Image 1: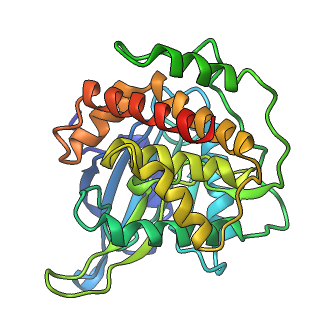
Image 2: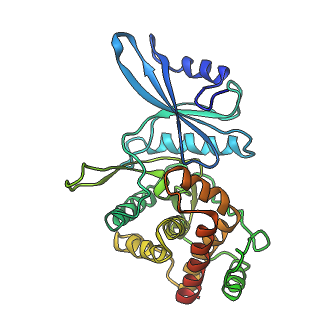
Length: 313
């Protein structure tokens, strides 16, 4: 089967959720994801009109049903709440109708931007967007956050600062600090944020939407900030991690009061990346960042962990 093709049962399911006279006339695979197959579907109607939807399919993912239920719930919650996200069209979380668990949603305009150029402008926008997400107060809370990484699952990179990593691992052996819960995206980073980028020479870059809400949770704001910080540190250089946390506070966000509490969440997220460096690097390379080899990402992760231990430890 072509990577662009939609499987027969899934295609039939999509058709059931289209308007009368519409059909799928084009399929494009979307790059950059790690856990799900993403496809942009062009939907044609009578008179030559077209619109676009996005199909998200989980293949061989153990928690697919939970993830798609979370995402569907988040997309319903976000309607009219001031945070632009895709609109939910249909969900088959258990794979009862499709070959695999799937979610169909509207397509948002804009594109991800992972280049170093223009980062100074984008970081404050990312910070303000995350503050807006954390300000949401849903009538029904999503499930509590889950942290899968443990002190025993961390993979210390070859040649890393052994003392810094040992100290960082000791940090997450402690009980999690108490926190005031917030609505979390749980996978907020530049790869899940769409930008409307004007032509060269024109100002006005803005965020046009936030995607991938499969991890929507209830937990500490620090955890979302830590995740975006780590992504920025690995994508653009270790110093960008702490700078994002600063930008979040400048935008009105509130983080844990104590340095040891902040360190716990920042280190927990950074260490979690040690288990998936190869997958993360490959996803970024597919988007055009060929220089972000597994080794390059490991070196940046090592440097970032050292920065955290030096500044907050």
